Length: 238
Image 1 (spheres, rainbow, N blue to C red):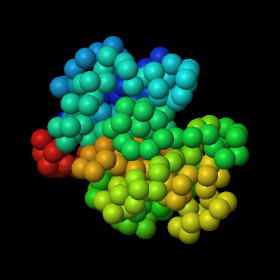
Image 2 (cartoon, rainbow, N blue to C red; image 1 turned 180 degrees about the vertical axis):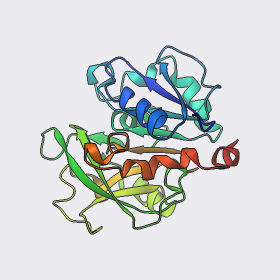
Image 3 (cartoon, helix red, strand yellow; image 1 turned 60 degrees about the vertical axis):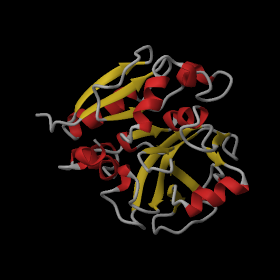
Image 4 (cartoon, rainbow, N blue to C red; image 1 turned 90 degrees about the vertical axis):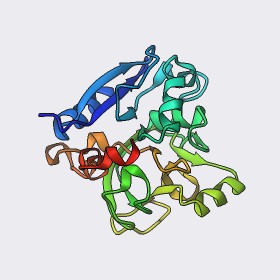
């Protein structure tokens, strides 16, 4: 039974996490969910939008560089500007950066290898829409699957992100400590997730939609996604 929240999961040529996100939000959280083709031009029917992981347009040029020009993107910009929640996961994070809906860029992992393993992230604050049900310092165990996950911004932008509390999560060990070994992709400041200034748009590299059931390794992803189901959550941004 639907909880009344309507979620659109954008799907681009090469997306491979769209169905994971769809089933996590529809089946695990009970939201009314629909896959939204990249050629659609309106997102008015949705309360929240997720950009999933994968390899949009085969990661040609740069990850997300072509997807940013998809027909659906003007509608996504309007959706974000209206204050409604947007979540970019992995390639979705890369697309949001390429579209300048989030600051920064995702570079090649410092290992120059594709990473596919479980990791831990530490929530830095609960002021973003997607972390509203969490507390600062909470540690989530989530999987990663990326080759270009090293977050980078210039020094001035990093200062702004710190000042404006736009750093949402950092890579850490199981105890919440920031260590070199817990940040193998080499992200600046161990940054795993950032938001826009308003806090309604978040991009993160780990995959919460692939961590929604202990049978598949863990359910910490639900802790990040579940604010979609909270009474009054959508009314706050309507």
